[in-house]
Length: 432
Image 1 (spheres, rainbow, N blue to C red):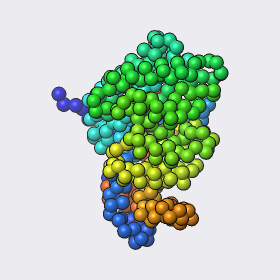
Image 2 (cartoon, rainbow, N blue to C red):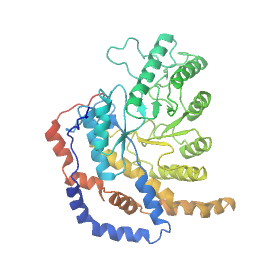
Image 3 (cartoon, rainbow, N blue to C red):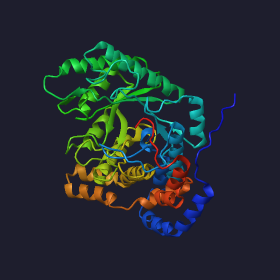
Image 4 (cartoon, rainbow, N blue to C red):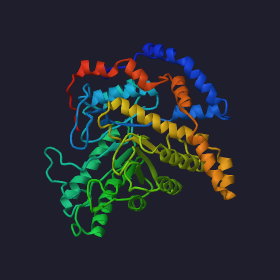
């Protein structure tokens, strides 16, 4: 039976090329100026072209603050339209070739059709995410006091079955990983027994782990306090690492950048997890105070660069492929911005940090470190960080058939205005 191809909004290539032609002269001058000082230019452009960041399905919808959401219009009304929007992003930046589904917000009713639609847009499905931090319509038991750590075995069983169901959906979409984040914790001292909560979580995860296909992974995320204020059952990287170690080789720790206590040295955490083979990947965002989920690179781009410096050094030391060895996904809140513009900004910020890390003179840095030359080591890092690598990213996008300036092109093509005409001014995305 032939699978129908669903009509979606797509960026017309000739229009993109027309806009690129208006920018190419200025771009070439900027690119030549940066490229002149880079010895391994072609290798860096190739790596930038291969590096893609997954877009979460929920991030295409209505934006707002923690206490209210204010639609900008034209948001997707179903999974098909969310996939379509990711297709728009990928057509513009050629760096967002996958979508990560959040179940049950985005249950694929027809997996074959969803895969066909994704393929039509040059996309595939990344990790699937479970949700036991909310009570869903028709749910028998409540997660008010937790899910996988709950004192009631029946609640734990319900949460386990949900995660196994998410794996089932992921298999249908050719996904290869389950991402687990729990809101389990306590708001007041004495509310729960820490050891019992941790043990219940481990035993629950062991049942989920046993249901994983042989070629799958489970990613265990941690957060220090969201949404609980006294304790979180998986509250830091050590607790996540302990769980992943006890579970086995298919389990590893997922780092959500915006969810650390102030002053945490995230780059050191990343380095050690990578060294131990337990770094699952990233949920990219940024933070001013903690658990903020702000646009990637909007607050502390230098920290993002330092994290990527450790990633590039650590992956190269282990012979890992930068693009595919670990998971890369955005998990930020666009708040009051156009969702697509925010996601384009986030991908751009990630690739800037990655490109800067590729420019670090590793041999010189190692020599400075071995000589305890602290000032020189800092200069080597900051030389790479202060380099304007945007022309390199634009060149990689251009060579792949994307836009030289994705956001400017998005605006010139009036994509949001066209989406509003198609979908309406006041739309509310499913699952948000």
